[in-house]
Image (cartoon, rainbow, N blue to C red; front, side, top):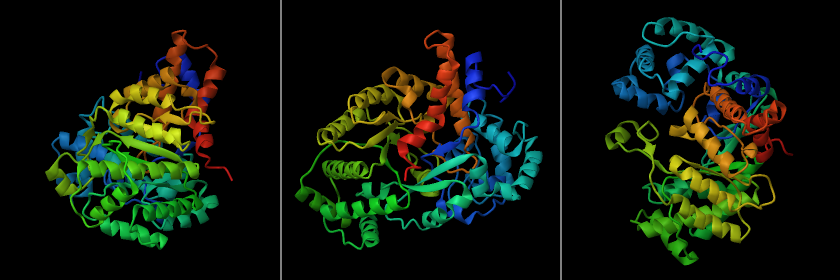
Length: 474
């Protein structure tokens, strides 16, 4: 099989038919990403391939940066102030050593799909690829909005702090018809979760100002959050997202919460129990609000972040110094949380992602125990995330989901990306999905009925997300 040919990742005849006749070309709903709405609105062209690919806009691609460090590239040519072309050459050198890594496949799939370049990126091909790609980047078709539209994307959900005024979302909403796609906010209250952070008091004041309420108690915080949910919903918000790398379920009384909150505002030391109490009751509050507004709540758990202190000091958070987390009882702690919310009838729609695949079977069976909410697949095992975002990781996640619940109801893939060139990851997932079902057909485990299985593939690839999140409901 030729490198990235029309049938790559498709290892059997049914898989090829499922992809080419059913999955290929479907629209994309990217319900979780880290694109900057300001960059989408301003729609400025990218200067060159380094700026769109390696050090993109406000962010950068920490998937690439990790590989470059492994290849001995100096930080100046990764996140530093090195020359853009030298950075591109360093990336080309890294790709020459990346066989078997999914980033190698994504990189070349992006070259192929967006730029029509079939060459393998290395030190020898880099000059011509740089020249050809940069010429295209200078055209209107490679501005941010055009890249989204031409990728057949219908919905982009960004990641937004609850204190955001959503200014650029408001502007993009006014131009939605002309753009041909929606850009919607998804609430991510990380700063609110981290009560132990030095700037927590300043952040709480900023959040209160948005609602014109002084937050002097946990009850006031709950009132502010309700207002922020209402505001996000008016701009089109339908999801929240929560990074909980560590979680212990410990409830607290109102008096205890008020005392803990004030210690956080004053930057006083908090005990482990107090941190757990605050986060537990904050998450309960957020779950109730997700339920009330009919949103979907996403949990991203068991990541170990910023492990290198020198690296963190030099380049900041989310720059590639992260790993899989190992809290062994994290699903058990969430079981306690879900039990409380289920008992009170306040369980929202939930998608649960763990960076540690050892959690997947436990999480899938746990969530299956809280069904009966009256809608299809109320609780879902999230797509293979981050370090699991590989052909093998996706297949394992699909197998776990299928064996423990109803995979045909799965809402499918998301980019979780900061890149405007990342949408071929949906194609990659769809190929893995078709291959998964193709193998089941070959093994005689599901009927050789391509029309029926093809509809399942289409639902997972696109239609389930459209229905589940209600992005097009009035």
